[in-house]
Length: 143
Length: 437
Image 1: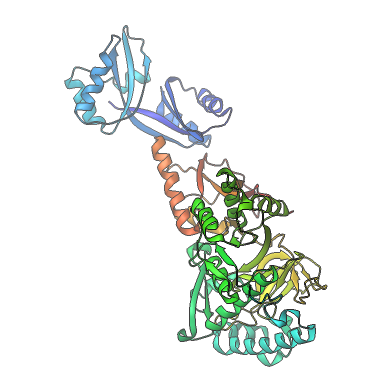
Image 2: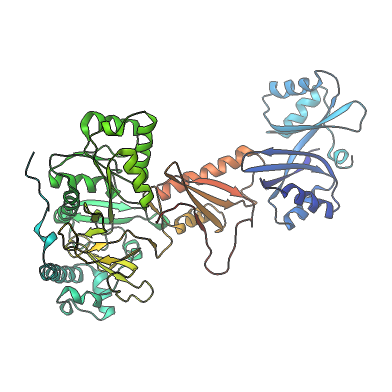
């Protein structure tokens, strides 16, 4: 159910992202989604890939600080207001969203949103009760 | 106006034989007291094969072994004191490695001797009992504030214990009270000067005419800037808490080296590697023996300051030996905003918190204030996936650094294995400040 996201500590210096993606390429890892949180000194690169465990090992072998974080993915209809419904459900259940990022899926008319929340299990339940289905991890990895 | 004294004490101008006679008497007495009352010194002298009777004149001093900062730490807090508690009147301390401070004690005689040293220095730059002393050194365990305070009072000047901080109020006090001279770190003097400029106050409208600055390295360039910003004459003062505090030595009106109060604090210059005493004029490590001290009679204390001595006559008429401004250290100690910081203290904090001993200290001087940044390598177990988690980690390290070092640092977490490694002695300090001319 939950998706393993790679979180990588990256110092802000030129060429660092190229080196990381090259490491993944060499390990035959396919990237599904990508997001960067940045400050003046450092960033956190967050990746959804097809083989998270293998990717994690490859990055660690390359000397990077990497951790696997559990996130959820939900499919949102590509119509005005659809995403606000999901966020309202979480807000009313008092579930905090740490961060999120979205990408267009290959499913007709849907967007996938990756959510990092403080209680994944409750978040999935709340969303499902409201008619918003979370996407199984296998489907995201094998997109 | 009172009777303006040119010298505070006659001994400042004594012929060399008289000075040596005084020093020899004090050294004999002090060595005997150290041997009889401090077990550390009894063991040290015995191991070294030297007895108090072997010391007859000041020229015998080279027979004695050295004392190191580590000896003060090993005997923390009061193990090297030579007098019982009822004789002590004051304790000071400076930060030391691994959180342990270097503690110094004073009898009434020690406080008086120290204050006389400061009073002599103030007199040598034309300060009199009619002057207001604006003391902006920190008051507390640090010797700066109270050292100048008691020295100013010993002279009969009026001490204004402003302490450091609140720069606008400092300027207000200078204007309203009519402060005649300023005592603080050179970097704080710069800040006060720049603030005066920013406020649009004309420095010529202030009564201030001199400044006594020390506790951190500063250059001739900085001296000129301070003199222009504050419209004063800036004088250098030297001291360290282990020996007494500020006033161990200080410049006279001619500013050709700092006159050492050598009847209290006897200086030598040695080769830091061999321990050999070097002739006057040669650079080496400065060593002090507290020949006049009762509570903490340190024998040949290694200051780690690289310095030289000058005994040529001074135009001011004083015959006391003059020391040059130290041009560096024979160890890795940094002086950050007047606070002594050892890289080993930083290493201790990092290891305690579970980080690697690979770190890099970067020191800059921005707007005349020292800024220290410590780069630390991220570890897997410390890494959290959120920006606020990493910032909280940086803040928690900075808080621990502040409590151990007594000075604030900026922590910058970097990628693992990104900091330079080197064979043998790693260079963990990048000091971008210009500290010597």
